[in-house]
Image (cartoon, rainbow, N blue to C red; front, side):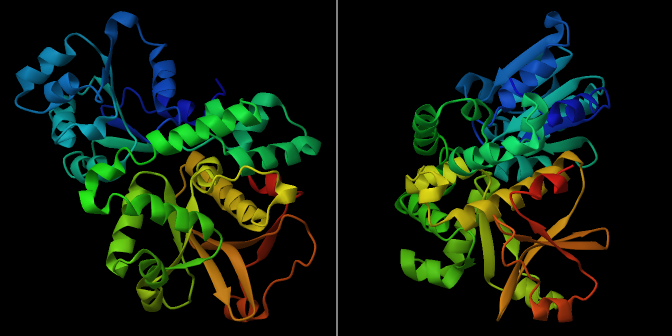
Length: 377
């Protein structure tokens, strides 16, 4: 197993009298991570509960403290896997942590709708949340000891097959088969349960449309026309896909907070490029691809997000579009602004004139295949 940065952060949060919640896509390695963390605790004190099992879901549905204490027995370290599948899981966790603050409770979830909506309110001040992302370039380099001249190999592999930990170590054919399996069997598993039966065919079509528009501004209106649904339906379903950790959105930086909030255009990125490529069934080498620019931009934005997540920083992220140019990523961390353009090569790099005029204090750096890694430490 490639060591995950999150392991250290989670271990440092144990014994604090708070529930630890680990979010992340299905098959990303949440169960592997928590089992590795549990390995340090005496086996007699451990309890692993899989909420994909109906009996476990029923047992954890809160009725009373006494009934929950029968479930956990004498365990001191408890893992509740896929906890979002338990109705009112937030109340269950609140009852347990209030009555037994010395318990170490780790709850994982591959979708945030139930955990976010049913955990946040009952667990206000009682939880610590983490996001387990696909592997970062930093984690890969640290594990394999890659030198700078090998970074191109890492980049191409991530741009074609993504960075799910178990997939990264497969060869190309194995990776393709596994990604197609994950996409068909797991990607929609939680999301489909939240949409109307008559609209369930919409999600795969919407994801394919988003995959093909990756790197470009997305218009809810244009997607609605393409798919034959209302703009509000498009926005709602993209939100569901966000809450399943399949995609995420960046808003446009406009310089006007009101217009920024009302702007219907967004850029939509995929957490993992392997999943994106599986949706369009294209795993070709980069030299054969017309979407290399979009793949590289997504990789750069993903890696910056992973960096901030691993450092536990809250950073606002945007993109900027003008009539005669673009800036792919603009970040604001506690009033400190910086911006990036994402170009595979260093040719033709220039900062758009209107960006310089509107935001003279924001420096724009280049994220190329030669410079990206220097911005990930």
